[in-house]
Length: 424
Ligand code: ATP
Ligand code: MG
Image (tube, rainbow, N blue to C red; front, side, top):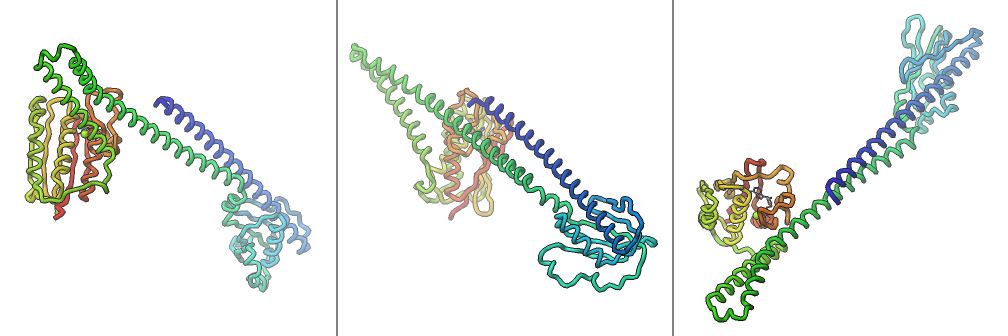
């Protein structure tokens, strides 16, 4: 799949998801408002009924016009201007709420209209457990006060309404699951895409690396097959040498890929001998003299570690340095300037290899130690490689319980820091 296609799919899918979420939000909000409206209406009717019943019981002939007022979202008052006995009020309220299917805890308070102060209040739970509770505290009250109004407060109104919206909670949860699933799928697609890019890059590199020696060998063997070549032993020897050299190069490449690609930490055979890191660094740097000279670059060493001996495998440790310096040269466009330094930390040696090359972006830094990973450069193959070097370096460093990290800025340069414990 093309990058552009994937982007379009992700974009469209995200837009549709945002649409679905917005619609869902709109409907849930509407449903909540409707549910709340119904709740308020039922409470209105219930309180109004209770008020009328109270007047009937008191044999009061006065007419009540709109006795119930909603003061806030969960607080209602009913003005009856008559005596209210708390226990009677509580019983009537419970009855009304139960018949109207309003199974919600509430608090009621009785006010004195003259002083506007609370004269009685209680919290009533309609839970089945509480139903069997001891008698209400209002039961034994002797009541001789006149001129009252009462208020009813629903502390858990919001959660009660949300509980009533079961189907909406269910559909919202399904949408949430869809979103999680979607994010997961996108993640898998992107991962697969990256894997296939890495695979293509690798195949391209291999082809590139192998094509040159193969065609050289083919050309040389054609020369050797010419009938009169035996008359010119010098030429014959030259071509035979070319075939041998190219064959060696091919063999080394294949060996490298086969060895590094199948490298596993637990199958590594590491010699453990006392080695001097500074000596190895100097030797490795020397092996690059020719290339550095040709590219008019410079490798500076600042070997500051006081204690430079560690226990390790000479070949693998020098390979670590070889790979880091090789990268530093390969990824510096011209005149590579490389600094190698060492220092001691409390239980080992820290080596840094610093270049002023093309650098690695933050995103790519996360992946450079992965097998076959090369920073994508489109289809440009000016720098050859299989993406195996750093993976190998990391494997060896880990085998010695060391640490490796990279810090880099694009177009400014890269620093690799390796920490190797003394292991003595
Ligand atoms: P090889 O297997 O031959 O070493 P390689 O150099 O491509 O191939 P690694 O050494 O594993 O593979 O490096 C992985 C990638 O990290 C490189 O392709 C390159 O894009 C990036 N990289 C590594 N070192 C540097 C550096 N010093 N500066 C900039 N980019 C680097
Ligand atoms: Mg490399």
